[in-house]
Image 1 (cartoon, rainbow, N blue to C red):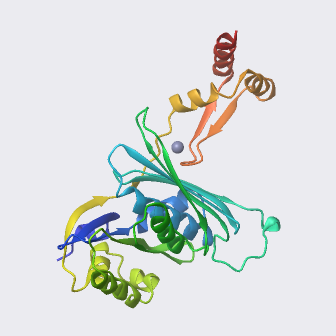
Image 2 (cartoon, protein in one colour; image 1 turned 90 degrees about the vertical axis):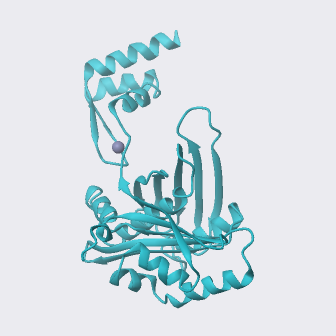
Length: 297
Ligand SMILES: [Zn+2]
């Protein structure tokens, strides 16, 4: 029987029946392919944005509803920055900034090089206090540096694996996992899981053959029995809108608006997350300028 959901991007969260080890596995093949097409990425860029998006989803899936995660990676490698917003509902958006090849410094580390990894947690409604956790990029490999983030910033012993496989510029498989030891976990329980993760010799290979998150969890937990606590589809979603663009423009100041008016007559505001363009015509710019000037006077 063909199980339709097995080809669908989603995460599956589980917990050991003893309640001491939790895990989540993500399948994101179609999501990463769609992001590659949207941002017209090729080769390594697809892998870097793909892993950043999967990493952000691994963080967001354990957040409370109504919260938002912003993962910000600033590295010294070919890609100087990745910015990803992810939500516990499974929505995600992100983009990548590439460095001029001439500005590239020699690096012996992983693909991200050295730099910083920050996770900002905010409530989407007003009033919530944002929380930011920042760790250095120690290895330049996102999965390894994320496990350091959980250990350092949230004091949760964690193992992370992320992999994006390509054939040319086509994504053949993309996914990842996060396994965490909860308070009360015995060293034997932790060791058993660590051993199984170690035995998944190549996550990339394993995912290339079978991106099904349920199979990945079974490989990790093996004889440790677990129950599935959540299965949720994941998808690209950008919440940009004309209203948000208008609000952002109203914050740029009278001087900037005047020069935009003088230069082009028509401004084009582009959303970095989804590449949607919002044309701002002359009457709108004039109206904005009037509003900004009246607020200042
Ligand atoms: Zn957008």
